[in-house]
Length: 425
Picture: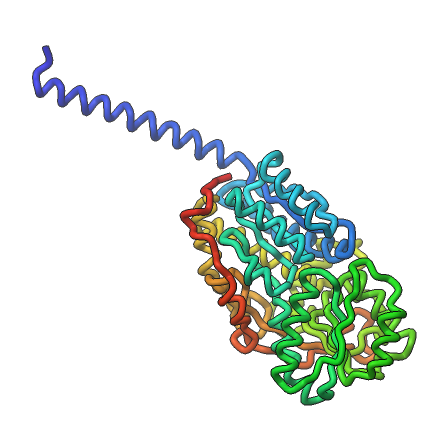
């Protein structure tokens, strides 16, 4: 029969053995995790309307990942990537996200240009609790009514760009406005933001012309523009559609006939076009000729990493992909874990100095909408005698607070963190 003292001693021994066993298991798990790569799914288009931008997006992500892998990875683990073409199609984006999570066992997903595709991916990501970075799609709904706890939006949206451009354009160019709109979610919501701001500042919308995705013949659209004779044409047309539209406008000599405002101008959409095709005013989040510390070095890194790429200098899409990926890896490091809840908390409190962002103003993540608040630039075509790749002339820059999308805060209803499935990779 055991005495009370003997029982106590036995309990201590048992507890000590159990604690040792637990520590051994945890140490083994940590060792296994240390040797196991962190798998990131790249959900960017390789075909369809945004294939060129998708390729640029991926290059940005991969350069950031290569830099981290070169210095030992994150938390002592190398980073591995899996890419599947989302085809600029929401249904494909949804299938890709399901496959990446269920079969490829990705811990995080990064990438988007089409807002419809981004929305589809984010719904799947939220279901599983996978942190998803929407790098380059810019419908206001992405950080508004279609926001999710796991999704973080890195580009400026249509409302941000409209706030930077519309008021000045009404004053400078006139009050009769015509809208040309890509017939999908980004076009609709960007055009809606432009319409609201233009009317609020005294403009009259004389017409809105819808452009189906995949349009290559703009003759009917441009005939309607000529017949309407507006003061301003505000276009929300992207990707290869925009490239075709700009080419035909220039061919008809209409670039100087009206004041053209393109809400946002992605670098891959226009790179290599004749400068006469870059008429009008357009928005962007970054340009490789900004006279800011670190920009020249960043361009040099790009050229060293991608010497054979036709696009000889990085643009805003590459920049967004790089910056988003770098911030994700920093968030994992700061959290000290790949636990999604811990990483989400780090991203929600993200602040990046102007110097680190290579922009004119400090940037921060809005915790209410999960959209990066950043500098917005307005640009136009550079003179014909400038260097071939120096296609833009920056006209102005706006601080994040001056172009904040307050409507997004009103419409975004993030899921509770407690209702978001927890996971580690």
